[in-house]
Image 1 (cartoon, rainbow, N blue to C red):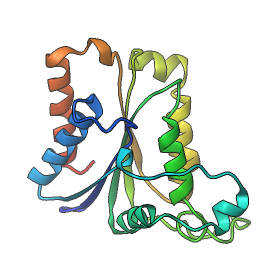
Image 2: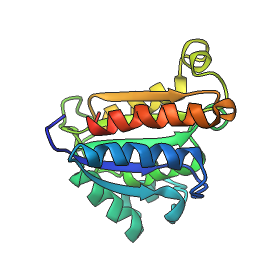
Image 3: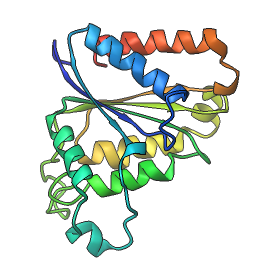
Length: 197
């Protein structure tokens, strides 16, 4: 990552309560990034109106909400994107999926010419980190379940539109972390934020 990076931090928890672990982790990453001299912008999906897409026609030609257009501008501005969300039913929450479907429109995140394997990926030149919290042990999710939903997000969404590298932080056993465990994870995320990694 560049010496001083433009970082976009996307909080994907559908419950925007400040008491959520995802908020504490996002705050820690942001504090570290700002301490490292990076510029941080934040988006909280819980505060956006994110409708469901119901047809290919809506995806290719539908009008995008003004709030989501603003997020597209933030994605264009960013050099490094951090997406933080809890694992629900083995996958990202529906709100995160709906968000990705809305912002990844043809001509913005997806190439207009989807037939060409060599078309330039519109969001190339940006890196990403995916931070996922979960109730199960992270090692079980990673090795038994093969981190299937996170790998799909990294390969079929972020990688497909040009993000590289895409790194991940999996935080398991969240119900039993306790204050010390939360503090340790916040310290780790501050360090990652300082490096904009």
